[in-house]
Length: 108
View (cartoon, rainbow, N blue to C red):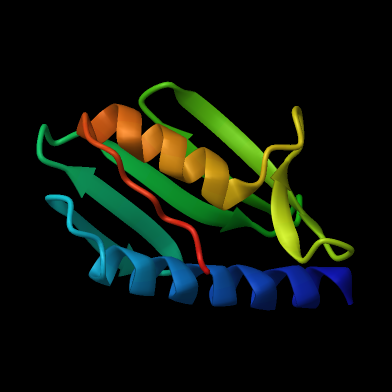
């Protein structure tokens, strides 16, 4: 049951993220294939986001490293399993570093 819920929540998160990227003014591209979202920046660096069903986690790979997120039903968000940072907050920070300009990828 948890796996199904987390997988569905991941799909919803990807949809939110695609909408945010569509409305972002920065010069970044993205592609989604088989539930793997790849964000590519002007310098050709990438951030890759996918779901690891074996761990029921959202995974993010960026230039600065790899990050794993557990879904927290109480707060309705994905949180970094090491430091508790919310996924969209950390993604915005990592995207800003890789793009060299302010990028906010967080639902309102």
